Length: 269
Image (tube, one colour):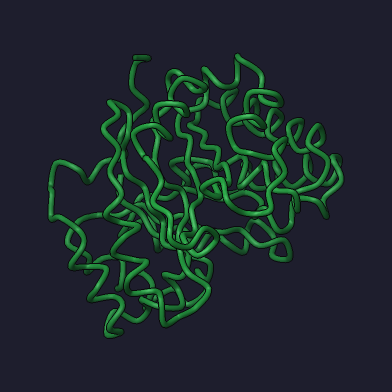
């Protein structure tokens, strides 16, 4: 899988063109903001889906703490009802281990609720964990692996289709993770999921060309590693397609016709 994050689907026509002109069909990870109604997204998502597969991010991690469980449940069912035919994969948890998401037990309950609702309809789910490379201010209990092992049930960890790591290299400057070890550990926690990078970027725009190349260059020698990547700043940096960063992105994409379809989760290894 090869993807980008679309956080401004309202700029629809230039976004569709920028996606369609890439050397291979991408997956567009669309961020659903809190204020719009689910039905407001139907037209832009349908247009984007003509040029890309769609992964829908139900609630961004920055908004998760603001939604009490009843409001979260109502939003979940509103979005599933309105957009079900248009979304190929539902991201039911985004950076769920982050300190900013709220109480861990409440977050885990929201993830479990959304995962169960999507699975009950026969859909595919994804969960993103925040990975800081081990050198930020994250408390040990909020580390990606410890948090997932403690707060996500074994059943959910066996059922989820995709597990992603969000990784921003400027959170841990000067270090290079051992991706073999990182994804080996992740694969043991999630024994059936396809694995990859679920979000990357750089706050400093001057650093983005280098960060883009390094992000999309991440490979892990794991049988279930499928890529992902999902550059966070696609709407800002690469729309319209005349922008220099779009050309940089396109140069990193192999034109592989066999890779157009969303890959499914693979058997446990």
